[in-house]
Image (cartoon, rainbow, N blue to C red; front, side, top):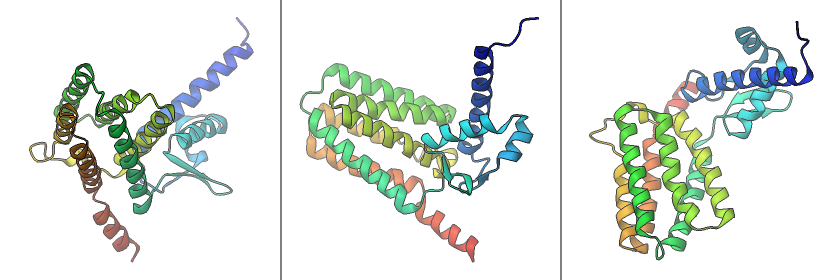
Length: 234
């Protein structure tokens, strides 16, 4: 029988970490664990039959993705952003997308417009299947395809980071699961943005970006969530 080598041990630990990571991520993103809930290592270890090391490694990875907040001497908690934090994230995204529009609106090509159109078609399909993870990925790629056209490495990096963080917020608090597709089709906002790019109309683009951000915040029902949280605390 072959003895287990150091490489085997490392691979086994990595595999266990990946299993814990996927398990916790699914539970967080699909709201099986509520925002603000503490992730107890002992309970997770008992459920998954793993030691603390892969659990802590998985939590560190989840923290880097904005899903978990690790508090010294207290433990790890599912992220629970305040209304102000969410609004600040969308405000930063608004500025980044406006900067992108200003940089590329005069030089955008027919190929670029075709690529945007293709992303919108993909987005429509996610509405048919109600696949929120695929929707978030397609939505991210639509906006990242524009940021990449700037060739500004800082803008590209910051845009990707803010989109990833906002995607976490959308999973935790968005109403995508319950939307009436005949009433709320967010891809229509992207179609309007596409037409504004086609017409190289910067004023129209900046206005549509403002509308797009405000609509996204409305979908999250932040004021209603705050009201329910207040009632729960009384």
